Amino acid sequence: MPSEVFNKYIAFLEAEKNASRYTVRNYTRDLLEFFAFVTENKIESLKDVNKLTLRAYLAQLMEQKYAKSSIARKLSAIRSFYRYLMREELVKASPAATTVSPKLDRRLPIFLTVDEAKRLVESPDLSQPHGQRDRAILELLYASGMRVSELVNLNLEHLNLAANEIRVWGKGNKERLVLIGAPAAHALTNYIDNARPLLLSGKKNNALFVNRYGERILVRRIQKIISKYSLSVNKKIHPHILRHTFATHLLDGGADLKVVQELLGHADLSSTQIYTHVTQSHARRIYLSAHPMAQGDGRE
Image 1 (cartoon, helix red, strand yellow):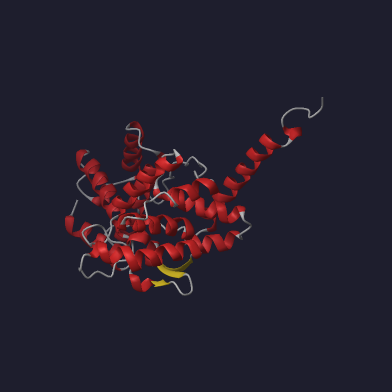
Image 2: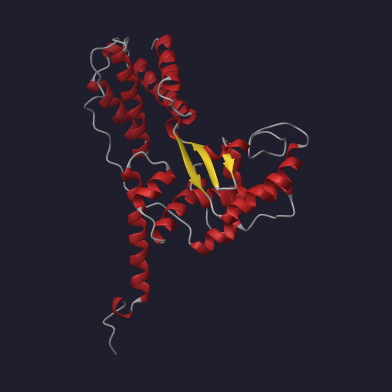
């Protein structure tokens, strides 16, 4: 495959589509895998790729036991690439235009109970600078529902702790305002005033969260931090569970679905509606375990 065309497409994603670096990374990997398949099948030009080529590729992915979500993402990357080729008039039609993505299994998000969330955020050792930082991270993720990729990109100037507001740049570089409560604001203030200067050790850095070397903390490190403190609730927790927990607890508390959508930064309301199923499922479990008429005939 012509590397010049591919490089221009990646530049297009970054400059014109404002794609996040994670989207660019995934699309790059997915497309290179597809190009390798095309080369192995002795297809010399992008123009020669057709629906049969694409179906054979998807069949190979299924044989290799890829998750349906991964196959759907790879197909999305191919669709996007061919839309770009059509725009540049390098091909006349896209082989992916009418190819149907595999139907995804709609799994309900996992979330923490209120007590579990409280135990998790209160587990760091506040006598240590890194413990104060970790407490602020956990409080902020639970209080705001922001993505970890959004959290690691926060700078000090993005915070307005007087109003308990934070400016966040989400997917597609879209800006939104997230709100936090008093516990998160207190944890952030304590971290900024006391722990952050010690972690910086005299270095200058406008990143909100820094590691022990005074550098901006990475997503991988946040994942390890959350995994470490998950022992406090005896559950294997990944960062997105705190986002699920934020949304579920808001809806349980009576928040409007559109408000939750805005706070999460979802472009499509259907992405937020999954949490209504979570709260309904939770309510059903409580009913079945608590109501006497749900446990039998309710009569002696």
